[in-house]
Image (cartoon, rainbow, N blue to C red; front, side, top):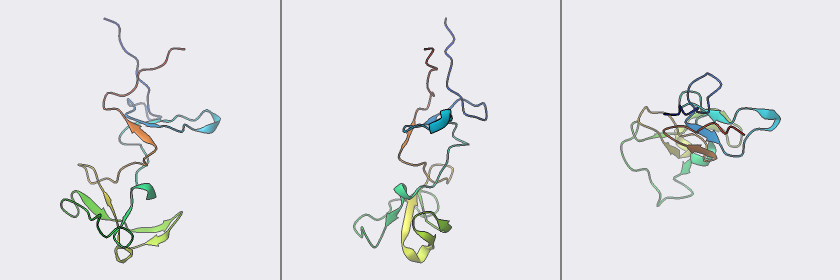
Length: 111
């Protein structure tokens, strides 16, 4: 049986996330679950802007308030600003929506 080679994260683990736009300069677009950048404004939800879109589940387990000292776009964010985001089973914010996920990882393209 042929062994399948998988794309690797820079840390050497099998990559489960791929940054779909890619990186210029030949950077590695693949990341493992531990190294993928998490917490992106594309996953923030605003109670003020979308009052009908409230979080489902338990605060602190399924979702958390966004609290950041200096967001690149929004500046300082506190609970009082009313932004929340879903988190994974380990309490981590989701990666940017531009990442694609594959539980098994991606096969190396031999071309």
